[in-house]
Image (cartoon, rainbow over the protein chains, first blue to last red):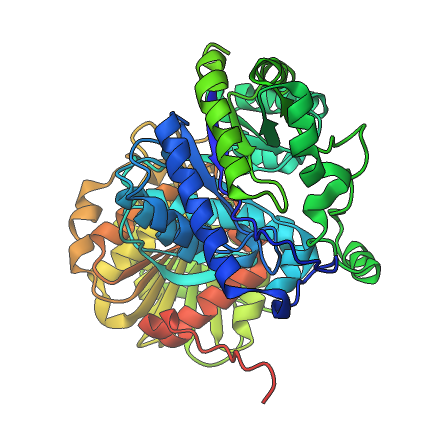
Length: 361
Length: 231
């Protein structure tokens, strides 16, 4: 089992900010924002020192959930400080981005980190489509087409043109090429059948997130079956699970200290849109994603995925591995409003007392 | 609707369909034989589209047809001359790509631009002729790689557009890069989501690409779509 620290870059403030998305910039304190960003970089460096296999970065917009909306920029900033761990971009919200530009950014990063890049591509959440004016109904197809185009930019040695449904380029010829051949280990981050189909057809990994482990068992088996039909077997690290975590010396202390940051879907406080906007998204999208689904529903999504003493966490990681087939866990250590010192302590306990014991899974 | 006609050329009687007016494009059919597709109709809105039945297909006597791809190319060049065409563009699909390429090699002064859709002029070494391919084609296709034809690729100076569907399971679309490598002024375009029969699967997208290329040649790489949202 490999472990990744997901750099959240949470904007940590004691100020009361009304719920809802987008968060008005008037609430933004420049010094707190600067510190939140640097705390996130410190956490990534510390995770590397502790022996984490990956540090990961993702894209989120207009919210206290993250002050690092451009994952490639953040990753570029950490490359020289994270000496050993892989740099995982998990990832760009593809429907919001120019796929050729994403391919170029990732190729640069793979060279900057000397071939340690891992890539994950995702569809994003409805609030983010709004941020870039993308029609929610198009996002699934944009995601699939964008992924195929990115893989082609990395593997095609001759200039080519692309006549897509959503993207059209008459001249594509990406420099630099990724250092890893033919390209970095890449994951499709999504639980739909289309995601599993695409991952299997292109020999890519598959990533799950946040929901109870057992809810992904069927998708895991479906993915394996599709891989077999495509003539290959996924390896242990081809399935990734992203979840939230808090580790303390005892179970009681972990729940007492960690749970307030995650309880009641607090992470979503600043990504939920108005009800009318959610309804509008659902009305135009043939495959709507309800961003509120799961939060507050213990059957589907627990407030926190891994919580407890190191002993308990080891048991939960084993469960995750057994139930959804994950060989990599990408862990969100920083909950909403969680100060840096707590994150660092939780990281340290995981790195010293959990990490060595999950290698065998 | 196209009008069907016949003409004598180079000792052959060639049937052809024609529609539209303006600069001429001769469209060479694929291995399924002569046909008139949505692409022909769309192109005929702005130019003269001529679609001959290649010797050996349809009502043409197979045993009296040309014995090599290069001979077919000469017959098509003679056909164009019989129609009084001094210059024209060529658009070839699948196996007829070799015919179009030989014309571009042997009669470059006549050809403005060349369009190759799912071309079969270069095939992978392990490629097998499908059992149901028509006899005229099977007779002409003896090798997956025609070294003589490919040896002339470097001399083709006209703009050449090569289009492959990303889902082509008959000929791997990556073959397109070989044309791009060897033909100096060529463009290799991937049609997302289409298989071998691009004209059937994404006719509008193919028309926009081919129409743009026939009209503008090399300049087709320059986007001239108006991006202004509100003046």
